[in-house]
Length: 421
Image (cartoon, rainbow, N blue to C red; front, side):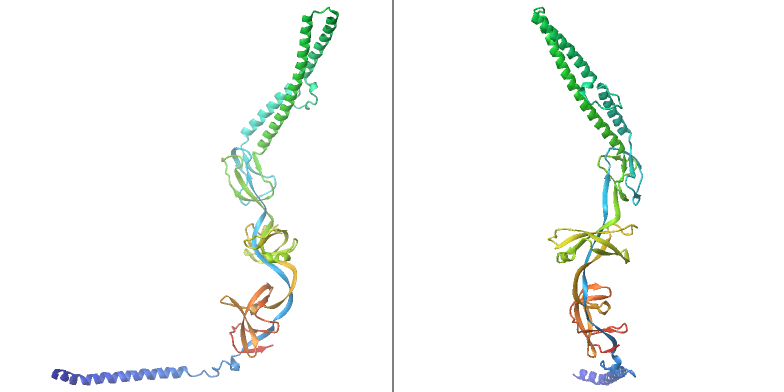
């Protein structure tokens, strides 16, 4: 205890000094805070802190919400498609001798695209022509002469007819001699057998010539088919357009139905759009269609509605329509994404406001109305846009007035306003 008391007596002056320093430091901090608060609370000369003061009012124009008649339009999106697109395939087998066009080239109807080696096809044609010539020779016909119209004019039939007539005459004479008892029965039987054989030979000649005539027709078709295959060795464009794909190269061996080229016809173009079923009464063939594409944001392309799908997709509750767009300069390309607008004959009354008076905040469209001396915020639902005006479906009435700042200033709910002319 004595030691502890002595220690406290020795440390008391030091503790007193520390306590005095802490009090002075705390007093200094408090004085500094008071000075800062005092300086912050000073008003700027000429400015008022009252938000309702006239000097803080925002100059606005009061615009009426207009009730007007508008023509309803159908807005939709879709894609552009080529008017015609075809995959050109090889109709013959053979090695590719030459590829005459490439991707992007313009081709006309009948223009050669690919040439296939014609050597084997030429041999097949000559073989078919030789078989045809043999059949015509057996009929006694010249190579390039007319066909046989009557089988009785064939040499084989003429010979058989002559043999039959000769045997018939002998048969008649032998029959008379037999009746007179001059010709023995055995000799008569021989004459009769020859006559019957001659008649059968004639009938057989007729049938043989008929078969040859059929073979001539068959060989002629074989020649025509061989000639067609030889012509098909040059693969041609079925219509005018541009090459979309090239699938062959020189030296490649082609099989029948091997795809060689894809051709598209980009003028006109088809645009296919999806329309909600509730707008079916607004759509008819012949209506004008306005299109815009991202590649040319400042241009509007015009077309005409050409087809309407008669059925509705039960999954999406939409039906497809198709319009034709002239594309003489080939500005548009198949596959472009398009936004389309179709004006209808339906006229309805609607509330319209300037599009610039809308504000889009956190997923909601808002307008500010004149409410005495302040701006009143109002959430609205918008409909169709027509030029610089937009339809308001819900949120305002025809008696309301919009508060639109004269300068580019932002309004808030309750902002003091000063309506100017």
